Length: 179
Image 1 (cartoon, rainbow, N blue to C red):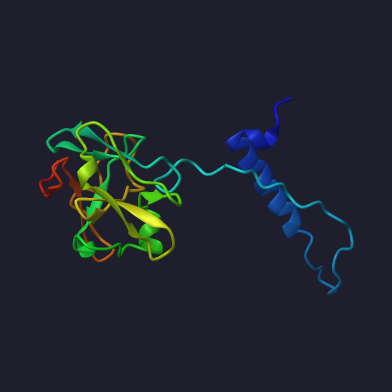
Image 2 (cartoon, rainbow, N blue to C red):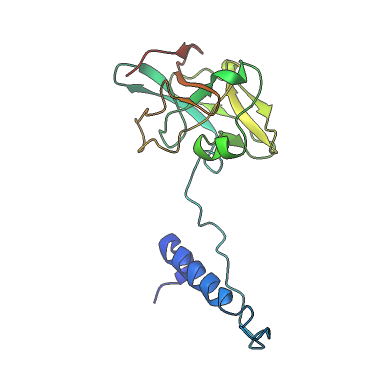
């Protein structure tokens, strides 16, 4: 039998069942609490899917129809800039960052260029929520949760969270045309 906690889908189900079991152990209608000892659910070490915040910080390039070569992360997911960042600092936080996850860097990690991306244009900015975010030509980089996968650019030209979102070229130019 496979270790349930080593399989992401099964571990998520096991965690959900454990949470539901614990939820039923609260108080009863007569105000007394259950005295039965329920073991705490085991939390798996890595059940989160790879996103911008957990993936390696490689910035590479991919050609996307009508947009030409644009920046992508190590998983081939399109990277975007947010106009309100004004080429200067991370402004997409909280709920915004849930839909537009920033390309976070681990402590001491630097972004690495691949493909046509230029190392000289890579840097990082502090993330107001902690840590650092990879930047390109001064622009903080983000992915878009609604992109279906590598090569998808559904966030291009979207006006959300107080500003416009665009892809960026390997030259560091913001691409404003629509796919």
